[in-house]
Image (cartoon, rainbow, N blue to C red; front, top):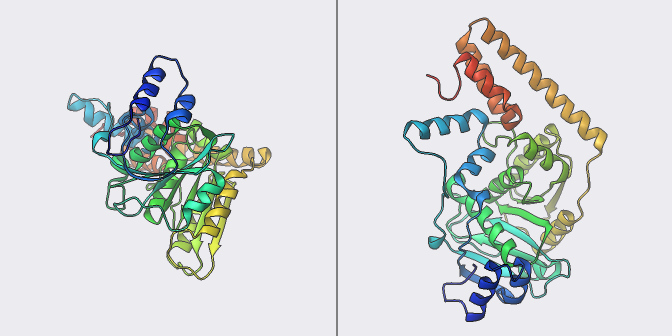
Length: 359
């Protein structure tokens, strides 16, 4: 359940007991017994999500060869990738609940901060009220914290708990972040498109595809391409973030992601979105547009053709016994195409004995 550090009331316990017995739906229990509106710090959650488990993190965030390498390391030590990377009893979150619940359910913005302490940026509360969007952000999830072991699982777990506790419109759930947090937010949107419908990328982001942000399995990439909307929000004077955003946006087009928008904040540098920019960003996130099916199909076919050519080169090297060159070719494919290359890349790695668990 969700609670500040102080104990919950009796009626809160009754609500969850009724939910456990199947006498109420999650949304009904949440609507009747959830926290009052406003800002709460030191909030705790107790519900773990399989979407944030170690095995799922590896499947969604690592390239095929990297995931296989990790499984091999665990197997040699007699362990498996099970369990959760975080202990929720030690984690605290900041939650803002709008003053009024929208008829169709709240929106939800899961925000990754750049610093260790979660904060609601100035001017955001009134905008969140206007659009009926819940804000949740984890403490100890800043730029100095581990992305795979903390920042990402904390965000996914926060989203799952809020969705369980409140009536949330599943079409209005987004990842977000400022500065280094925006670089985590793009990974959340890419690897969990079944949870997040897009991302608010404020003050910098990363390109996808490649060593830094590997592509997840094909089913997730397909969903991201078809349904995700990305909104970049950058200060006019932010000379560092502007080229990062351009590079990130260009990579989206290369990987057939076309529903991308940008907002420039006049006379601002490296700063969290001001209230006008946040308002425009939420409007853009809500007003998604389906990609042109012909354009999407043609782009996907181009990616498949280029990847097939790389695989053919690797197969030729394997057939010729050129193991080291084949290993390099497969490593390059793995880095470039990530989950799109599975399972073929794993089969080829086994054939040439140059994969994740080979010497």
